[in-house]
Length: 109
Image (cartoon, rainbow, N blue to C red):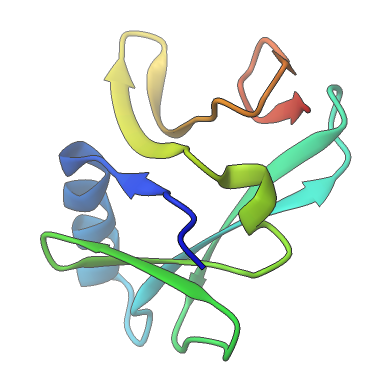
């Protein structure tokens, strides 16, 4: 399976910072679930182990897990971390999203 999901240098740096502060956590798990004001929402969780069907994305020592069911919704996406005046957060630059909510946490395809 050659689904292309990438991790920015900024996201990798922030993931490494988070993992250094969390005992036992080794991965950031990103998923897609139904719900939110636009139809689907992103989930972000810490994980200590990989499941058999997870895609593992690595950059600069940081590791992200994406479950098989979420992969089609994230194909071609870039996982980024932005630090702006209004706040700092992980951001998914998703080419599959046809609409998104104002807060950036939900989308539709």
